[in-house]
Image (cartoon, rainbow, N blue to C red):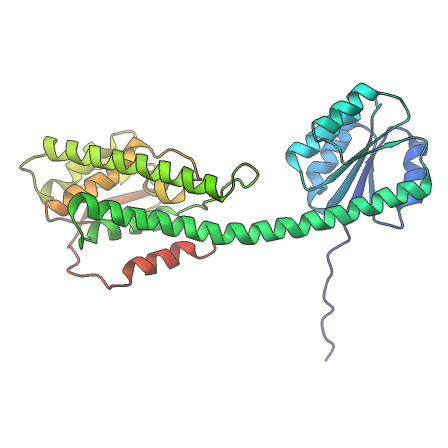
Length: 335
């Protein structure tokens, strides 16, 4: 039996953009042995090639003077959208001001003046390819780090919901937490995705602490308002209280049921990116679950097409000791 041949990813390519056909042929002949070469003849064509092949490109070499926009505009475009690509500027003109600007703005890794010294050009491109490889390895390590920190962030948020409920209505009352997390699961939690280009771990901790504090304050304030507005009401009034807490822009009453027309509202605190504020309706949702717990009631949510429907349901008498850990594991699983 013949063993299947493992397919290898194609080697990383170099994008060379120049409007002079002679320069393109010369570059391909000089560099083609190092890596595959993709070519374009203008800044606009270079942008299109970047958008189409960014994952397979390791290095961008752009001439400066071309019809229309200058090459440093293409390098700026690449820096903003595809920072993993090593960028090199080349020109036959002494455009010192624009070259200095490109260097200062971090748009280029090297500046190579025409006419090229072939030996030096090959050395520069070889080093650029090696640098691109190191960046790829770094990005892989960052992705692995991100995966761990995403799991920690989700776990911290779930723990925060549990702690918030215990602080507002007393410990040992898990029903609101269970309902809240079941609703998040039903709505479909997204991915917590910090931007590691802009924040480090200390930034993450600070942002999450501020966000959790604001959310906890909002839930506590809304719970106090619900207690005052619905004093004397009980579990039978759950639909009215939930509808009041969330507002007509998010839910609608349907007899004894509450219908979410915007299910994403149910998952905000757990699913939104770091630094995203939590809406008043979402705080009202958790506050209404806490009010309902004090009133001795419970609700169950089911998906109905693009909506989620909430109705009164029997309370659970007890929960397993590892129930919170089970929810953390569920939300930490890759999508």
